[in-house]
Length: 428
Image (cartoon, rainbow, N blue to C red; front, side):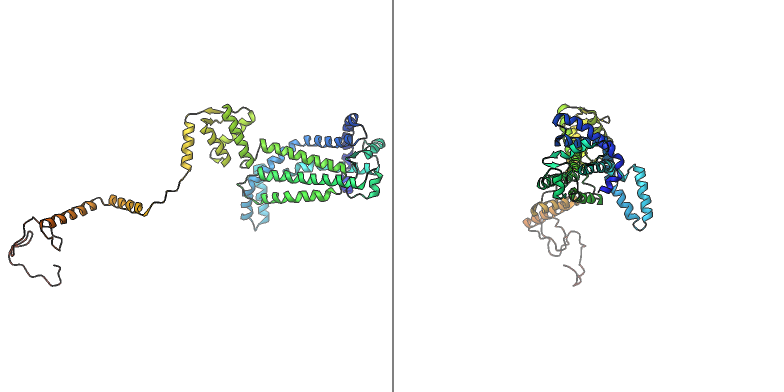
């Protein structure tokens, strides 16, 4: 670690100068040799660095969202050119260029603050050994060596031997308790920050290997920082714990105010926005109007959260406009209710056997409207013939009247005279 820190020795002078300036301010309040003066100087150094890195943090957010949106296309390219690595790389670079995405942008904040981190580590190492560095003269070095944070010198480490700790006017037990608590807090804040990102600010409709990688990093990073933390001085632990807390708060603000489309955070944000718009009848800030404007511009490409937002406005009698404002609309309620009714498809109730048979008979009657009439007429005729004593012919012939036919008299429809005998095989 000392070798790596020495590589960033060119920035130790600016870092030491910033610490000295803050020490003058806090020293006048808490005393120049107190741990509060030196500890708050390190915290202020972190805050100053992170404020300067806000533009890089914004780029990191945009890059992370673009990478999430490109995952399906990247997966398609990998499957299409799985046997041609060179063509696969060319298509990936082409995709990055067309969308303006830089995969390294998500690492920019960490890469940008790493020189300050290692420079601070180098400064604290020199303080522990009692050597001057940068603008820290011997008097300031001795003052920093005497500064304790909850009983632990800012230059002490968890792995220091008892003799070195005694040289700093402290006990090994105090040093290890303070450093252990700070390492746990540093790892826990790192884990919570990543977990908050995965659970609330990720588009859950896109299932890609990128999400699995982020989930693995959620567990790997805290372990890495815990292992490395036992070799960090107390001042560096203060630095890293402060930057983790800053990242957690910064990310929490972004999740609440500018969530990723399709995520749970976007659903919560749009529900809050809907309540405010319905309560006041208007979109009250420029940033919120830009959000509504972006949703309207998507048209049919809206995700489920955005469709619920537009439907909620319509049910309240409001219609979102292309400029991000809302207007009252009498037809919006009817359209919203009609759309909701069309989307709900209810399954038909199970009918009894008698109802199904009745329905089948009705359908059959509709297909052959004469069949029921003929059946009814035939049945009525048979009843009439039985009542009058006329027996219908077996061949289906109809009786012509109520009188009976005399023997030898030709029936209606038969030839007069002697009839030819019927063949035995014929029907009677």
